[in-house]
Each structure stands twice: as structure tokens, then as C-alpha cells.
Length: 637
Ligand code: 0RA
Image 1 (cartoon, rainbow, N blue to C red):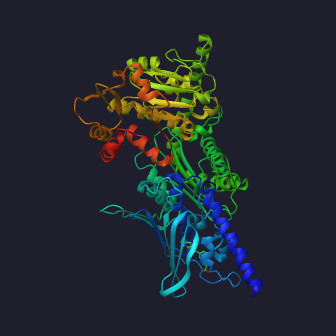
Image 2: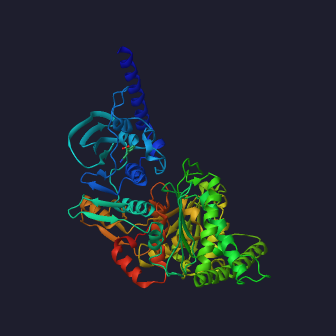
Image 3: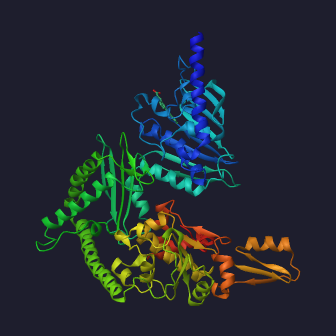
């Protein structure tokens, strides 16, 4: 008996040390303690329920944001096992919540754990990082309950009643001494849950936000799986064919793929491994691309669409206008790359390739009119690529002749270390003039733009190289565009868009952001793009230092604080109204300015925004602007 107790204690100590480590270095387990990390907690819990759905036992998952930012995740799976481990005297359920990485060990006959958050951690991490956690399990005819505080068991699992149902319900309040914020963003959770529903055919997921008077609610359930996903992604686009190509194979490596072409020029391929978005791609994407290129070239040859003298279509020609989602399930995924979102398992390439080769070529043979429509587009993409190459060479040659690769209007900085440098892209000549005079010329470069900017959403790459508004931007940044873009060559660590706080300013900002997103995506993903925030008002009074306000709320606050007597309120209509000193002080001085960093947390959302705002279809644009009127003014993706 003594020995028994000793072992029990040793186990407990290990448990506490494990969860203490999570609390000491939360970033190691959930990436960060920012809003992003906070949302990860929800994904971790939902992932466990999705695993139960993938094992075939759970049909419904309900997620609720309760008042006070308490999260509740409820599923109708088998319920976490409640039996007591004879040695530790701790229930399986409690073990799952208190031992680091314990989740997988209780897999039993449920197969392998395929789902899982970015960092592959589980319930115990959420528990460790929560002020309190409460778990209710229904199974074996009973209702069982347990609760924790900061990862420590407060009430061990106890049977509290009878039930003929099964399922697991988790409620938790994230720890405000660990997270920067506890405020969940409904839209972020909604988007991720919709994505989870697309990825798990037939699973019903609901989300309810009870924080406000009238609760928000959404329900997602897609019998079409990735087919529905692709239709959703293309909802605002003009399609080349009505139904997506759908491929599904449940072999050793389960593979699901849906493809639909649109008339747009961009390539939208999303890939997932075990429901994790592999932003950096990897072997599954490689197999997909290789097969796509091969199958279309083979078809074009055998149907004499490509003649003997013609050279093969290149991968990028065949991917113009494509929307595709690839989802694979891999038992022991190896994730590589900067953000650990690149699949490394080499066996997956061939698996995807062989399924695709077979099914895609069969589809093309059965749907010759679709094949023809897609190939016509590929061929014109290939012509445009050829034209773009010539345009690019022209640009290069011109630069050599000019003996400078920098655009004439650029006022460069003297520092050569790119990481220390920033370039302000400024709308309008007068603002450009003030910015040039006001800047710190060691670190800050100014590139003035004026006139009408090209809408890249409606143009192909050849037009972009030739465009006299975009060329200076491309040359100043110095890293190329599109597939040639090389982030290691950027000449400035910060690319700052400085435009007026009015409708025209918003327009140019959106055009530039669309350009960066479509043609210099790594620049945006790497967090190098910023929006300058010029003030809207200046308050001045005799004997008082000028005060700048950046929002209407701030103006009211300051007027309240300082009083209105003798106060002069100037509203800036544009950057051009500020003299160089004012511009420096309010918008450019690193000590006092505010910059908004543009991030792509959600590439799907960003694609939708740019398609709708910059594309051809009028009705969705009107709807979007009406629904988002207050954001459009200050759009960041
Ligand atoms: C392992 C085994 C069994 C169920 C689960 C895990 C399970 C875990 C979670 C987490 C959230 N919801 C869940 N639902 C189920 C059951 C094994 C059996 O009954 O034989």
C-alpha cells in the first residue's frame, strides 16, 4: 500500500510540473497569448469532438460563446471514458485533462488521431491556461462531472445523475492573467467552424454568441464536403463550369479534392492535412500540381488541342482561375517550414498524384465541353505569360540602360540594411512633398503615386509589368512579383501605405492591398505591409501644445478632458494640408505614430473581400459595402 501511494504521488508531481510548464511558457504550446492564441483554445477543444466525428460516433457539435467570454463545446459522441485507472486511481477523463499529451493514448479502437490544432496539443493545455474548466460526460447510463482551476483538479470526476444519452460538454474561462485579451471574435470562430464542417462531410456544427442581447447563431452542415467548400469559395465568381470536379478516395491515405475553374486570373488552392490548413503547402500540394499539369497536357495532346509544334502548357497556365481544396489524412504527419504548416511526408505526393491522374482524366473524357473551356483559358494564360515575360525583359533592359533600377520619383533612404528601412507609398504630389521634407532620410524612403491606379483584379500579369503606376512600386520594393517574387530581396522591411482618410484614400489603399495580396503575397503574410494612420483633427489653443485626434471618439474624449473654451478644431481633409513637421510628428515619427499592420489571418476571407470589392459583379459588392459600411472606410484584410 505504501508503495502504491508513493507512485501515486510521483505521478501527481509529474502532472503538476507538466501543466506548470504550460503556464510558464504558454507560447510554446499555443503559439502566442494574443487573440490568436486565445482562439486556438477553442479549436483545441473542438478538434477533439471532430476526432470523435471522424471516428464515426459524433454527428453534432455545438459551440457557444457565453456571457463573460466563457466557451462551451458540446458534442454527442461516445463521451470521454470515465473508468478509473487501477494504479493512479484517476479517471481516464481526468487524465486527459491533466496530463500533457494524454489525449492520443486513449484512442482505443477509435483509430488514429487525425485532427488536431496547429501545435498538436490537447485538452490539458486548454485546462492549464483556463481560470476554470468544467467537463460533463454522459455515458454508461450516467452523467459525470469534474472541474479544474488553472489545470488543477478541484472536483474529481463524480457521477451526478442518470442519462441514456452519450456525449461530452466542456466549458472553460480562459485565464486573463495569461492572455492579452479574452474577447473572442465571433467572425473568426464562425469562419473556422464553417471550414471544419466543410472538411468533415455531414457533421453539423453550430455556433451561438450569447454575449449580446440578441444572440447570433449559425449552423453548418455540408453533405457535399469539399464540393460545397469550393462552391462557397466561388460564390461571387463567374464559373467556367457548373459543377466542381470531385475526387474522393478512402484508402491508406484518405484523399478528398474538389476543383472548379472561374474566369478570374488568380489561383486559389487551399490544402489541409488532418483538417489543419497547410499554408506553406507540401507534398500533397506538390502531387496535386504535378498531376494537374500532366493530365491537362496529356488531354490537350491526345485531343489535338495542343499541336505537335506547340510546347507544353506550364503549371501556372493551368492554375490560372482555379479554385481547389485538397484534404488528406495522414497518420504520422511531419510538418516543416517556418510556421510548421508544410507537409513533409514524401509518400503523400505519389498517393495524391495517382488518384488525381486517374479521376481527373476520367472526368475530362466524360466532360469534353468543360475540358475545352478550361484549356482555352489555359492557352490564353500561356500567351499572356509569354507577353509578360517580354514585358519583364523590357523593364530589365530599360533599367540597365538607365543604369539605375530605381524609379525616378522615389526619394530613397541612405541606410542599406533593408530590415531598418521603410518606404512610404504616398498618394498625391503635395503629400509626397511634405513627406519628403518631413521624413528621417536615413531610414525612410518616399514613393509618391498619383493618378488612377490599375485594378489588378481585372488584369493579367503582362499588363501589370507594363503599368506605369505599379512599375515604380515593383522596382522600389525590388523583389519582383508573382512566382518570381523573392522576399529575401525586399529593399524595405516596412512598406507603409499612406493615404487620406477619405473615400479616394480608401480606394487607393484597397487597390494597393489587392496588388500586394495577389502579386506579393509573402510580403503580406510576413507582416511587412502597414497602413499609416494620419490624424483626422488638430486641437489648438493659446498656450497649449497641439493635440491630434485619430478618431471621432478620441476627439470627443479630448474635448471633454480639455474643455471647449477657446479651442480651435481643425479637421484635416487630406495629408496635403499638413506641413512637413506636422506630418512627421503625427504619422511618420516611429516614436509617436500608430501603424496598422496588415495581416492575412484568413486568406479565404481576404480573397472574398478582394473579389467582391474589386471584381466585376455589382450585386455582391453593393451588399458587402452595405453590410460593412463602417469597416470599408478603414479596410485591413
Ligand atoms: C477516446 C475514447 C473514447 C472517446 C473519446 C476518446 C472521446 C473524446 C472526446 C473529447 C471530446 N469529445 C470526445 N468524445 C469522445 C471512447 C471509447 C469507447 O467508448 O470505447
